[in-house]
Amino acid sequence: MTELTLGEASAKTSARLEWMLVGLGILALLVAPFLIYPIFLMKMLCFALFACAFNLLLGYTGLLSFGHATFFGGAAYFTAHAVKVWGWPPEAGILLGMAGAALLGLVMGFFAIRRQGIYFAMITLALSQMFFFFCVQSPFTQGEDGIQGVPRGMLLGVLDLNVSLNMYYFVLAVFLIGVFAIWRIVNSPFGMILRSIRENENRAISLGYSVANYKLGAFVMSAALAGLAGSLKAIVFQFATLTDVTWQMSGEVILMTLLGGIGTMVGPIIGASLVIGLENTLATSGFPVTIATGLIFMVCVLIFRRGIVGEFYARIFKRAGKD
Amino acid sequence: MTMIFGIPVQAFLGQLLVGLINGSFYAMLSLGLAVIFGLLRVINFAHGAQYMFGAFVGYLLLTHLGIGYWPALILVPLIVGVFGVVVERLALSRLYDLDPLYGLLFTFGLALVLEGIFRYYYGVSGNPYAVPPLLAGGTNLGFMFLPNYRGWVVVASLIVCFGTWALIEKTRLGSYLRAATENPRLVQAFGVNVPLLLTLTYGLGSALAGLAGILAAPIYQVSPLMGSDLIIVVFAVVVVGGMGSILGAIITGYMLGLAEGLTKVFYPEASNLVVFVIMAIVLLVRPAGLFGRDA
Image (cartoon, rainbow over all chains, first blue to last red; front, side, top):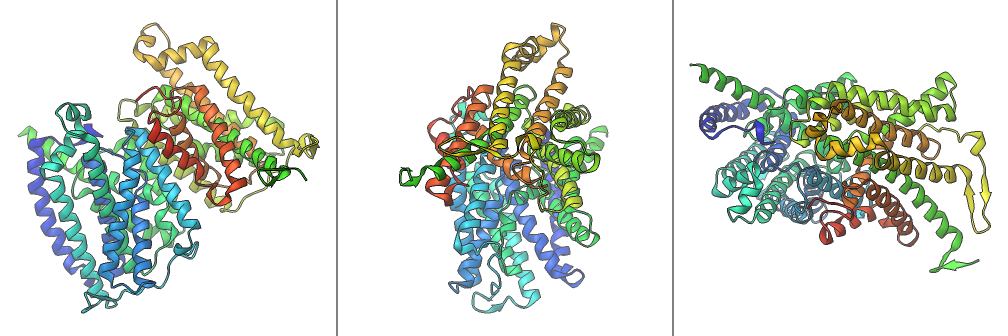
């Protein structure tokens, strides 16, 4: 996926642009619940965080995981179980979900990084399907029904999450922290090494980096953050079901990232919002969602590989280049 | 009653037969994947959808046009193959210069669309496809009862697999194909039409998936979801076998089918998982796959 990422000089300009967008975006998100149905917004934010976490791996390390539903859905199950059955407070449940996802990421990553490229994608897909079968059979997930009626509870014992706006701002805060964490990771020395692996793995090896460890590290971080998104979703919607661990979910997060722009900070957020918005619209129209997502996939791959944000930058730099 | 490992022989052999049948389909599908990947460097995610498509074409030929199983055995691979050719010409051929992952993503989208269309019109429930009269009933082999159709599927899949193997390893066309796999530019310079070869290869791979679909129709129900669950297992098979060798893909397919059947006898809960567990073990011991060449 290297050929579509931005050069270093343009990355600087893009960073400034992204800051402006980020400021506007945060402002919009602060007032949004007064204009738009909060549940929809929270769903959007959860998936946006999921897509950003996924992009940490695909966009900045160059690894295409086809198994991220495992972390998203798995964390949702862990959180739902801890909060509902063990009576844990929501923040503890979310942390547990994250830790569980990180552990799953460690296991899956350990196997998957043994192969590269297309095999990596197939291995993550297969292992994720294995986790799906485990969820189908294991009693704690309650099979087809899923874990329902998860109480939202009191955040830190003081903030009642049953109040819609409280829940919303909590989700927004977690979302911002998560995205900030990803931004920090990407722009740290660690992140630079990840990028060098993406650009030229063999050269990174010859420079003395233990590429396998870096890949595994990126995989675990991406898994933990995807888990954070899944845990959050479980608290918001008060259930965890098999839908979130299916391969279709893994595909969906790829689509969000691809549509928004692989390897950009804002892209996955925009992509996720569009995909979720589209699904909401289609849900009432009767047009099958899978056909729509499939078509977007094909169109994106054929003529729109930079994604919305990537295409936007490309236009701007083209114009800048002419002047 | 005779017992093997504390299990009645009948049940043991019955599960082994189920394993062999599943293995036949794993082998046929992973073979198609390997053929396509070998030349195009594309992992055909739509392989499962094309298998489902094949089963549905057979089903529709029967219900709408009254065309039975035997003609369908020829017609279905043709139709699915032509479909593959169109897809390759219109879309896949534009992706060869890019990272192979784009091919995977494109065919993933294609799989979603195909599955979505059939799901929209036929729902998720399965549609039965009757066993052709010639192969109805079964044969008593003395030690077990073998439904004729299942016996036929095993034989047919062996013919298909080794036919394809022979086509690629033993014919002139196959030698072009293998040469183009090694060095497409050089082969093109020798005057072989490589783009045409690529198109035909994808068509052949798709046709194989379609053929597997029509073979599967009387055994499994014809349903829009029949392909997607299978393809993931086949991916695991491909990881175990490594895609370097056609014969490797075939052998691995049968082996893992049998392993699955055996697990069903001894520990049914794990039968869904065993292929993936084997994949994980192979990755630990021999990351390139059992027959793989690349590290």
